[in-house]
Length: 141
Figure (tube, rainbow, N blue to C red):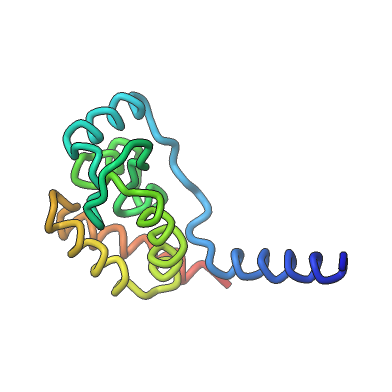
């Protein structure tokens, strides 16, 4: 039994390592909790992706923090979206690894869904973030 668990953990660690994005994640920055309250109030406790309403939803960076040069740049209202746990899990488990793996199509689809209900990062910001993701891919062995 222990061998199976150890083998599973080893496989999981290897898969996570293969899917890992850029290693340096910038801090949330000053005023993050205040900004979260503002975003929740603006979006009416409604998930920007599926439209579900509730409390305790995550304020998520549409383009991941690690693809921005600073927390001030990452924390613009256009780059923040309120997501329910299911949509946040989907983005974290599927969209971000695809982005870090070099497939930007998932993030473009995600942005189209979010654009229906509010602002999204500008095309310049998206291009810069994708360029940083490509740089990471070139540096990864």
